[in-house]
Length: 215
Image (tube, rainbow, N blue to C red):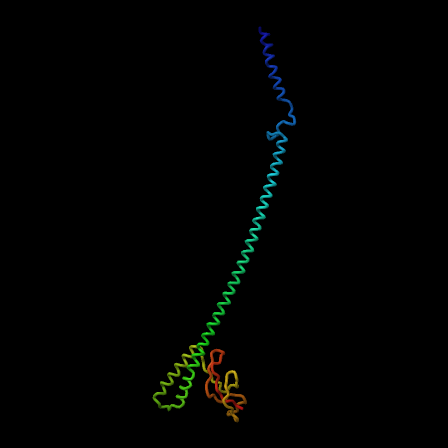
């Protein structure tokens, strides 16, 4: 009875041992690789990864190129707007200077016009002072009026000048007569007498001085 049982057990164990031996056979071409996938599938996966990397690099390169184009366009627009701003600033500066010059010229014209209206009154006051007696009670009042008029003209930048003893200058003087024998040994062409004072505003002559010149 015991031998029979052992024989049956040996027969049952034989198929199991055969299966184990097949499982322990050396791997063939379809055996799994190191990463748990067949070698061919692993190679295909690597090729796919390389292809994906190349596609990704191409997309990144295209994106970088697009960004560079956008930067170039932005820089060009910036330069255009900067040039426009500089031109606008230069135009405004020129406009400001032109307005300032025109305002100064208008102010000067106004002062000259005012002076020309007042100069005849000053001339009459000078004649009155020359003709009045020294004890005339109105003399001091006339002098005060003349002084106030001269001060008003001076505040506007207008001043009188008397070129006695200077060389005659036709741009500033008007010769009304000549002296044949000038006194005090003055040279020819020298102003020996001033009939009427001149007036000027800066370098502009409002009225030339009327003078007598040595011949």
